Length: 225
Image (cartoon, rainbow, N blue to C red; front, side, top):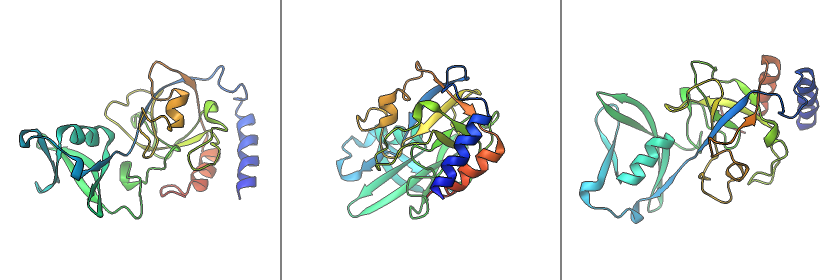
């Protein structure tokens, strides 16, 4: 399957007229988001600094120090480790002026959820402006081709729109999901390449549906491989 995939996509890319490796392509304004891990036993702050994660029924799910709460909200999700238990929280919506969260099971989507309960796929997912792009759209970023990923594989340059973000506005604005590797983690290969800085620009191509369909199948969308 992998060999056929590469041959098909290489041929499709040449047909798309983008063999210049990004020189004349529209330019991405990039940022990085990730899945924070909060260790509850290490949370030390005064009670006045605690913030509640509240669900849509006004139940308090857990209380975190403000910095952890803010990061969980900004990233859209977080893991909280309590002793031997790991809990998975996802932001869902704003209701009655309050940010709401849900506790999710982690077995299906261990890295968290994008929109519509779609699994986030580390290093192969982007959040986009869904007024411009559709969930399931595929983009090709030449800069990422052959990048060595933490699992020892090489990136093929293709990413799937699986999420959205409040600050992700515009056709060329994309937020790259990097799993448990934050934007300042020296092991985050996307950060090393500059994808965590909006001042950097990288060429990209939005792929036609025939190619997008193959990429989605290859990445087991809407789940993960």
